[in-house]
Length: 454
Image 1 (cartoon, helix red, strand yellow):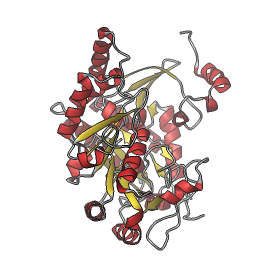
Image 2 (cartoon, one colour; image 1 turned 45 degrees about the vertical axis):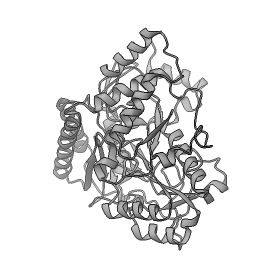
Image 3 (cartoon, rainbow, N blue to C red; image 1 turned 60 degrees about the vertical axis):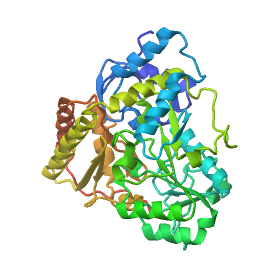
Image 4 (cartoon, one colour; image 1 turned 90 degrees about the vertical axis):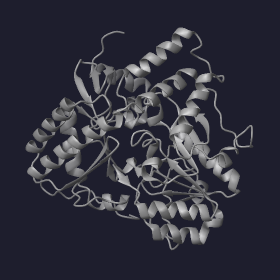
């Protein structure tokens, strides 16, 4: 390929790509960036500059860029000759067996291509089996870009007002979603056991499924409280409602058996994606046989796709599962996480910046302006010092820390670690953050207030 500068790439892209990007999430403050190579935790831009990556495919690249385990698996399939196979093979069976061995709820498996597909199909499956049509989701939890669940997330113009039955207005997070979909999706406040119980008392007969992130990585790092999660499991079972865990991000990041094994709460269905493929375009719905038998050819719920189960993706996922199950894998990730959290807390205290830092599975939530760990989106939105966050983000990006303080409307994006990061990378990030805080003395600006119902 011809040598191309960053400026030249932007000019060319603006003429042919919508917004200058092929993926809408690749828009960054200051415009899109273009890269030519990546390895481990590093990105190399078109001008040859190295960036330390803390975004990592929005959490997907748990093993880092160009991991040897995946490269070897893909090379093996390419040498066999059938690298475009979509038909059933022994590798497909092996992948399903591994998932059933590691995930508490998994008795049957069906593959998909993305987390968006997985949650869409899981919802369809729950509706078919229960004969009900409403779905409960929680404010701030992101479950993909389909119309069924795209409400109350960072793309919404405002936060929803609370209703008398404990639910919130379902505010669409994208244009183009018909009102009928908002009527079928009940948005509830996260970690509010009373609101959840009141909603089910009034509307359980209408509800097919409850879907949630057991540890909400889309709000930074906000876990479900033990009391709340226990109540959700008990009440859904009591009313014959499917409990769906969205483990697209938590997956094999937080434990070898996913978040449900770590938390000791078993759902009926689980959606997997980013942390399953570690960069490969593969996802899955797994669950109890009684629910999964609703899929064709046993049941009558369609779940398939032309590119579903391509052998390259299956082989890559098998290699990723083996890597994340290796002795010491999670211990290394936790070690890096502890070092970064300790360093961030020390720097923020030294520079007089009020903040809360929380982490799990190599994902770290940094909440500038808060004085205690939040439990829901409104708590973050009410106190988060977005103006200071954005100022630091721009400075850090200019210093080669890619995605270190990404920001979304209403809340910060988590800092992401991968297995390829080292202690030296953590030291580099802390040194550069120290310099940014020194150059940007903290004063309590009028941070952005996201008024409920405004």
